[in-house]
Length: 128
Image: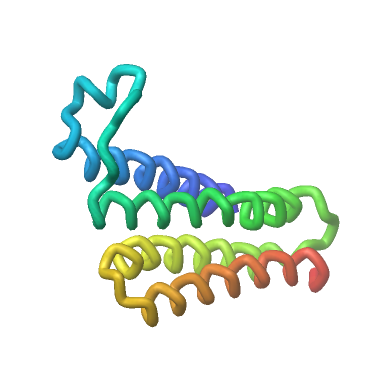
């Protein structure tokens, strides 16, 4: 389980930097290194990357709390929890390009799969 928790945290960190990298060409690295006052509006891809990152930020507590509870709850179903964490990770990884493409169907499917992974982790707390 630890591996998948760390994988999701690394994905989160990568997504933060991915969003910044997309914005650098439009404003320059020196402006981003400063106080960031008066920055221009983000372009379409950079704004999408920002929204995808915001969505991951909103879902991180929903993943991390049950994932960490697996270590605390006696008799939690570790196998189901690990499977749920894997589903969450791969779904969140797929969510990024599906959101960036602007096609709503794949994005919704990826989000639903990530939610299903979270529910699997929650179920693992009660089915051990």
